[in-house]
Image (cartoon, rainbow, N blue to C red; front, side, top):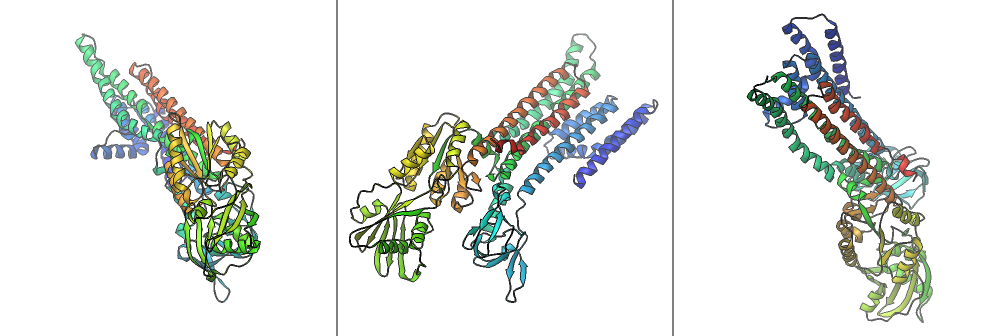
Length: 627
């Protein structure tokens, strides 16, 4: 507990001790007894009275503090000093309990996401390391990461080899081996060797900053259940206040008109009991806490959910649409076939394609450059133009070179041969003449088939793949993974059109999720009900546009995210039904005079404690990860 919570506990214990002592004293005159019982009441409840008075002053009186103040002061007015003190003591116990529970949830998330680096090491001219603020490190600077330190900024290893602990980012316990030339993301812990890393981003744009920003701002986007509770409390609290007032005044008036004793004290007591029972703390506290726990539990598994509204949307997902490259497949392409035209050598074809693609970071371009296997002289390449959905054109040694798909060749007025191989075809033209084509194959991720099966088991009705690849490639991958539907040969705009059709065809109250990783996926991620991005290797644009980010690029985590979301929603609904059911029953019993102040205390504090305990279950996900 923090200092404030410890102080509250001390006040509760002092108040309980004073009430017990006063209860054991012999009968005292009423003014003396009132004055003495005011001491424990004010010790534990002065802040509740202050908040109630502040609410009245600000013309916003209808909250739980107002209800507690009216009920306890009323109990004192009726001479029920012990019950008045008991109500305020148990209310403070409940508040302390929920404060500790929320604090533990925040602490759990903070420890999971405790990845913000305090410094970056820069090597000086004398070889000594200087610790500087990560915000001050410019792009392109070489930083040194020693064993045991966190990687402070995204970059590429220029020297050294090590194993990285990525548990805080991806939820995976196995370390990842890295060598010179590998990309590293901030937040990972360097376990073994010394690494020198050339930064590729500023600290504010690095992975660790984006993750912290996502988690910190996740509570800003409220789910429908949270908004319902806010609206409900706004109407409910004044309604029960006026209901209690009516309960205190109307029955005695009716009894007087009927010639019977009014029994004002009895009806006022019932009204005060009614107020204590009606306090909506259980709902107001436990519902946000449930969503907060669900988001925290997901983050411990390497799944970042940007807000509780997306957690709710994810729970109701019935259609999941995948991009292919980098999502279902590894995105690590290899040139598996070189087919030059007559008069062109294999080496000349690969060289022309590699130089034309030299400026591109696309996985297909990287595979062509890997097949070339030589350092690329950037001075040989000029006038590079990337044509979305077609390919690239460039000047290589002064000659025009075009590398891309059949649509690009058609645009240039060139005929292409029929191709039987399954894979991505990159056609090459030099100086307006067809030079041949390269066959490039992608590799399906090891967990992709399991991910599709897990989604089906989780109740997903339809799985769809959208890709810009040719029909044979798409068909082979779809059959291998057991997808329900696929659409091939799509441009970025075509993907949005397909999403629109799928959205129109989905069932009522069913959500559509799109899973992608590339910059071309950003518009589709934004259009889907739930956008899921691959975070470790995905583009910044895709991560910004997405609602859910998978930090280890494992599609199997989608089904896990849905299981977490659905259990969180179940906990929320349990709390709503439980709290409202108990409240309604106790309100009825209180109005009839069957339930007294002690039952009211249980209906308020007891229900809140049980609901908060239930809400904290959302934070624990170990049992779900085993499924």
